[in-house]
Amino acid sequence: MADTQDLVPLPPAPTSSPSPTLSWPRSSPPPTWPLKELIEPLFDDQDTYGRTWAVAVAHRGELIYERYSGQLDSWSGPGETVGPDTVLLSWSVAKSVLHAAVGILVKDARMALSDTCMHPDWSNDGDPRAQISLADLLAMRDGLDFVEDYDVEASRSDVIEMLFGGVADMAAYAASKPLIARPGDRYSYSSGTSNIISAAVAATVGRGDVYRDWLAQHLFGPIGMTSAQAEFDGAGTWVASSYLRATALDWLRFGELYLRDGVWDGVRILPPGWVDLGRAAVSESGEDDRIFYGRHWWCDPYDPTGTFWADGYEGQTVTVSPGLDLVVVRFGKTPPDSNAIAQWRRTLAEVLAGFQR
Image (cartoon, rainbow, N blue to C red; front, side):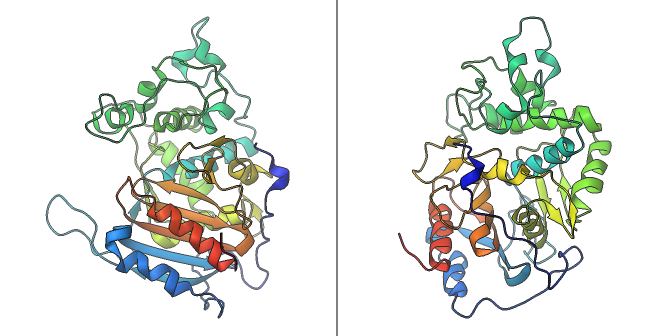
């Protein structure tokens, strides 16, 4: 796998309008597309999809659908009513944004996929974890014994302990895990892995506010993703496994960056081929016969529209479909054991492409 030669080509940016840095140009959906019929059940059928807070759709660089509903959860009374200015928590969608941050550093020759000894705790002589490469980490094939289980009743859950157990340095916590497989050999999805990568970014650009400012200057600012709010741990590392907030239209901007091969208004933000590297299937997920993992992006190599997506807990998604020249954002709260959003995403691509399974 990971053959980028067979990928559906990414469409060039439309020449009729600039990239939507300041505002989205608006248009109507293609008249043959049953877009409302496909999207409105997300809001109306809570038995299937749970609660949907926001959906935004861009086609050929123009906003063609936008809807908000409900209130965010709150421990202290009624939550915020969701609207265009509401910042929405990413959960693991942030991992794909981390992929972009790493890409910028690769473009600037400050990081390389072949880099090893990715955490200072692995620098002791003879530590086998020193052989883990950045490429292994991005593909979730580092071989570390990290348990990603969101069941609070589970006998062991490293991700719950890392995120909610008062861990000050989340990357160090994940990096402390021993190897149980040779680096590169075994796929195992791990939020700890993403935080190890984020710590490596912090070691390169600076920690805390310096890291925050670097993201704003090099990624969020250039594409107009100005609502983005990254959350940091006690070590000054962005918790890039989980914690980034932005409005629905800013999440749409991020998807648009990847749809356009990392180019924004004619300026290359990501290195050539970086998007392809992320969306090319490397590993079968083991969850579904048409869900694969690339490098910090999910993909379906059997989908003729070339759809790939960032995915977060409880159904957060930024879906990019090159064959349809389409980006779709959905944020809400779907039961984590449901595959309803995955099936909806697949149906959306199939129907809009004019075919059925």
